Structures are given as structure tokens and as C-alpha cells.
Image (cartoon, rainbow over all chains, first blue to last red; front, side, top):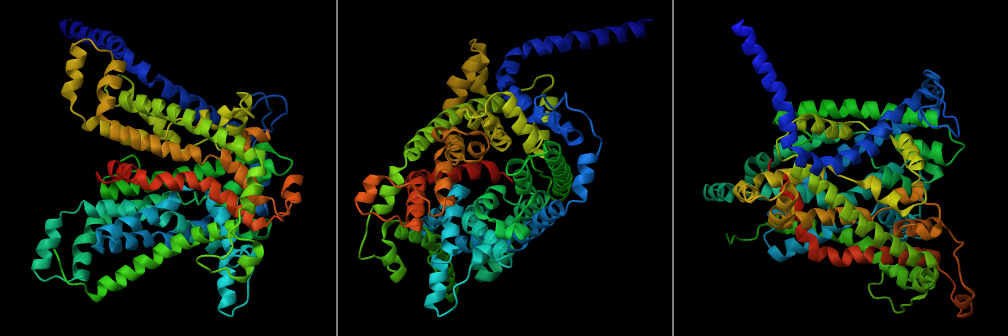
Length: 316
Length: 287
């Protein structure tokens, strides 16, 4: 009797305390309310709208009122060559970015750190990071002009006595143009990120090593690199996790029909079939769901690996 | 540590300089093409200081009424957007820095949207159902909160001394008063940094403009630029310019438009660089 009374009392205490704690925190709820409303409207309503992937949108009625058609949209999609081509291009461009682009800013940061002239270093950093703040509309405009038939790059070839070449419509080189123009835009900014980590290394370590007679290469190898290797590894893992995000802004602004076969990625494919053709919103949503799920699995795995490796995940 | 310059230093400086030139040269070329007559550029594309500079390409761009409307629209989107983004983000960051029932659940619900989203089509249909199509607010309202920035702000708030806040509360200040009159002044460097990040994002807005805006006079500057870049050859020329004997040089006009759009960012960036880099330091280095 006494025991159950005490239990009931404890239960009642909890029950009383929750509403009370909620009431005490009422102003905090008020503070976060606008943000929560934003996420509810602009993130969760579209997530609810994903059901359209299994429906056929009836013009004039909303998503909810449209009839279910099972997996028809996916069946149509999975036998569609264009769709698989966009999946393939996404993966190829994604891996090209990781192999060609990813290591470069790391090296750049290590080399920048070895520059001792302060003024020079500052000016160079400003130049390196500037393109990051321009939109892809601007940078694509610059790149398209630069590699066009009468553009600067072809002028250079002409001066060197080589043939002018139509790079922008050449399926063999277009992916490289994508990766290199992305390197041009983002390398400096990414390098500054690593440089910030290098600067956090205790300078006493470098001094001690120098006194012990370590040369430049030895210091980079055994002080600078261990100091940033964790950040590099985590960044790499998370980059692999977002493999499907290969640069929609860039590609939509830079490509042209002649290179759709090699540069049309999942995101641009969705855009094209929805807004540049008679649209089937159900099929477009199905592509989005396919990408969303794959992306989610990749990200969760990357986060899992990252937490195991370093104790830090996406949110840290 | 004044050490002797070794061969490593020279190679390193050379490499760093070459990469800097690779960054600068395309910019230089854009400016050059925008200011030179076609015939001059074709003959001498590598001149550092071309003999003949003209403003014809700029005149053609500024003939375009949408450049002015685009500028105004982008100013509105940037100003209103940054205010909206900062208010939402600051409030969330401040609130989630406290303890309250349901905190973990709400945080999970927010973070979940980083992993999974509804995709383009349901989002587009939502904007349509909200009757935001062809409204300037369609380029502002959906931008809301960057979870990344919110997380960094939260960490920054955590590091602030808590005593100030507590004594203010004892004096009877409300949560909002505490946030605005005690926390924010202390967090000013961070507030400026993230306002600038949001500012650049809003200034560079083109995608929602492309998706949602139909009237030419509501297009943001970046979309005006995009349409100038994408139209090949058929540039709008007023009779006034034709009478003045201006023959439009398509590439020149495109590059002039690029210069006009990127100049605002390029001219303020060197002075604000320290704040942008500061954001990296707050966000990344803590390990």
C-alpha cells in the first residue's frame, strides 16, 4: 500500500511537473516558434507532398486529392535511359570532384602556411577567396566566355600555334571544364578552412622541431599534417556522403544541349523534365524521392563513419 | 624566426603566385573584353593596356530597363532577406541554447531536414499553393534558416558568460529583453559575420527567381544577367544607340553585364574579408 502510494505520488509528481516545466518555458517556446513554423511550412509540407511520387497529379486539384497509381511512376522511370544517364553522370562527376578537386585545397593550405611574407600572404588570400562569393551565374558566364571559340583560352592556343577547339560542346572535355571551373571558384575558400586549422597548431611545436634540426618537409609531415589530418578526413567522409550534390547551380548555368549526355545530373534532369517539357509532376517527384532516399542513406552512413573515426559528425 | 630563404621558399612563392594569376586572369579578361571594341580584342587579346577603351558595351547594357529593376529587386531581396534570415536564426539559436521539454525532439525534427527533403516538385507546388508565384517574397520566405549557421550561433551563445544573463533575469528582464539587450551586443562580431553570409547568398539569388518569377520587372539582378548571357546575338538595341553608330559586340555586352553584377561584391569584399574568415574560425576550428 505504502509502496504503491509512493509510486502514485511520484507519478503524479512527474505529471504535474511536465506541464509546469512547459509553462515555465513558455517564453522559450515563443522564441523558437517562428523558426519552427518556417521548418513546418517550407520543409515538412514538401516532405508530406512526396506522396505525389505514387500518384498522378490531377490539374486543378492538389496533391492530396490526386489518385494513387502505385509504383507506376517508378516503373516508367527505371526503364528510362535518360534517367539512368543522369544517375551515371552524377556519380562520375561526383567522383571526379573528389579525386581531382578535393586534395588540392589541402595542399594549397599547407603551402600557404609556409609563406612567411605577411603582406603577400594576405593579398593572395583575398584573391583566392574572392570567386567563392560570386554566383554561379557570374562564374559560368566567365567560364563560358573563357573557353568559347573566340575566348581567351583559344586565343592562347592560337598564339601557341595550336588549333582552336570548341571545348564547350566537346563531350570528352566538358566534365573536366566543370571540375576545373569549380576548383577555380572554391579552392581558395576551402584552403582557408584548412588554413584556419593549421593556424590553431601550437607554434611552439614548429619551433622545437626547427631547433632539433627538422627540415621543412619533416615539419610538414610530422607537425602540420597530423594537425589537420582529422579535419581533412572528416571533410572527405562528409564529401563522399554528399556525393549526389555535384553542383546543380553550376551545371544548370554552364551546360548546353550538346553535352547533356555527359553533364546532365539528377537535379538538372528533374528541372528539365518538369519545366522544359510537358511535365509529369508524379514522375519528377519520383526522381526526387529516389535521389532524396539515396542521399539520405549516403549522408547517414557518412555521419556514422565520421562519428566512429573522429567523434564528430555533420552537426559538430 | 628570420631564416634564410631556401629553394623551397622560391618554388612555393612561384606556385602560390601562379595560382593567384590563374584566379586573376579570367577577371582581367572579362574587364578587357567589356571595354574594348571587337576588332581590337580580336587583334590583340593579350594586351595589358589596350590602346582603345570604349564604353559601347556598357551603354548597351544600361539601355536595358531590367538592369535597373533587377538592381532594385535584388536590393529588396537582400535587405528584407537578411533581416528575415537573421531574426529566425538568432531566435532559434538562442532558444535551443536553453533547456526545455521537447528540446531534443524539436532539434531532431530540424536536423532531419538536412538529411531528407521533399525535393523540387513538392516544394514548387507548395509555393504555388501559397500563391507566391511571381511575388518577390517567393525569393525571401523560403530561404529561412541555415541549420549550419544556426548551429554555429548556438555554440557561440554557449560560450558567452552566463552570469550576466542570470542577473538580468533576477532583475525581471524577459527572454526577449535578455536576447536583444544583453546577448546580442556581446555577440555582435558573430551577428555581423552571419548577416554578411546571408547577405551574399541573397545578393546571389537567381534560382528562385528563375523558378517562380514571371514578370520581367520582378527578376533579380542575377537573372537579368543570366538572360543577357544566354541570349546570343539578338540584343535589344534602341534606335538612339543605333543612330550613334554603336554596333553591339555580343561578348563585350555579356562581359560588361558580368562586370556590373560582380562589382558591388568585389569592391566591398576586401574590406569585409576579415568577417567572412571569422565565420570559418567560429564554425570550424573548434575541432
